[in-house]
Length: 232
Image (cartoon, rainbow, N blue to C red; front, side, top):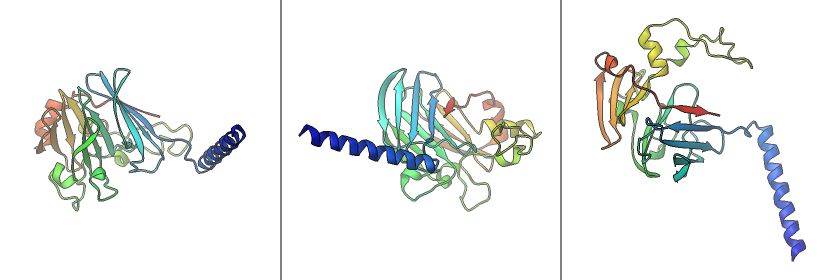
């Protein structure tokens, strides 16, 4: 009996080793992990993807109150480096709001904005519903994204091992939008769409205001912080 157990154990370890080697050969041994803090710094969501395919839900996310695990969500929240995704955690840790410019599949979990409450999908919005513009229009995205326009790829040594992002010269508001197309203050999320209109989402009562003029609201929100996110 004991011999049979050891044989099964060895077979299992060899199988795991084989999967690990195959994953390493495919470049999949490096999986995306991100940590995002609530505005008040008291809560944290740690998201772990099980593969590195953009738009992937295969993974798990953990919400912590300090070092104490509160709950988990059976999906990942991808944080892409091209400024097309953002995740926000409310100041009580109960609400997670995830933004992504691209909708990869028709299910609600893939909508452009998804809202989770205490680990369960509470609601979702398409770009049309949240940003009040048709996704068929040019520049109609949940998040304003000037990434390609403002990155100086040549001076940044893009594609090389010593890549370091260098920005082109630009107007103050364009530089602000590159870094802060989404800001949070007092549990209220302000997002700037690709058409330079602002949507305002209140995580306390889950109320949405949309189509607010950017020039009108920019002086009020320009010093608000973006969520602190760390990728690895």
